[in-house]
Image (cartoon, rainbow, N blue to C red; front, top):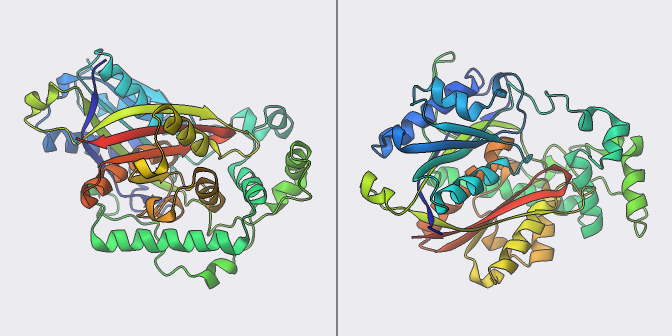
Length: 400
């Protein structure tokens, strides 16, 4: 097997998933086109070298339907010889897109590929595809498919996470993200032009720098009503040691919906000579795992644990972790079950602050990890994201 290297990565800023968000007026294809052209220009890349583009996208409906990985390359004017594959493993989709691309490069099938993700949640809202497992309560219960917030509240109950603790994690995420933005750590954002609003978007829009514990404490719990409609009963039946589900998650300690896209250029060792660029990192290993579907969001913990066991790594062997901040309670679970200290975990903030463009989040986290390892002069990192139904995916990367 060869090694799959990461040569470059770019992303858009994360726009608010609202009509007044900076990216809202762009179709997903328009957003991706600007990123494709950026990768081409930054690397003097001949697009004809690319074997395939693999993109994560969760809500493959409307503008995001029809295999957007393929159609977006055609829309951008790239050669029709480039294949396209769109992946949906819920919110870990773009980590799997990277894993698939890395396997094809390492297996000698392709010399160069692009992997990443896209989600324009202001234009194609979450659940717009009206999947039966989410809109039919009886069928959803049979499939053990719960909404993400319900799973987060179960995790909080099992891990003994208090409302104050959850709010503190959310506040820390905002502070870290704000500092990273002010200090210029997000160096891989490509300016995206929105001709409708006459704007060029260069900074993440979801960060709420003035968030405080007091402002967070004033917000109501979001998922108690859903729990009273049968979800609590289902979770308690599976966890008889619990007396009640503690509903601690609010709009302030939950992920912010966002618009964004990201691309990573992957290739084999020989691509360096072709591009005249050295690779920045290598993808060492990948793992997928499935955990309790009633917890919904614990997959990133399971995938990270599996990956570290396979690679015989301890927490001390890994310099930084980017693990999906899918509601505040999952951060505590990562700390409690994996023993990751907070000063190694999501050091520039997570999706509570930065925003969660579902199909793009995992690949953005991978790129953020790469940039931060380089900035700190460190070497090894793990990135992992949770999807619905307990799904999780993880990657181990090392700087070259």
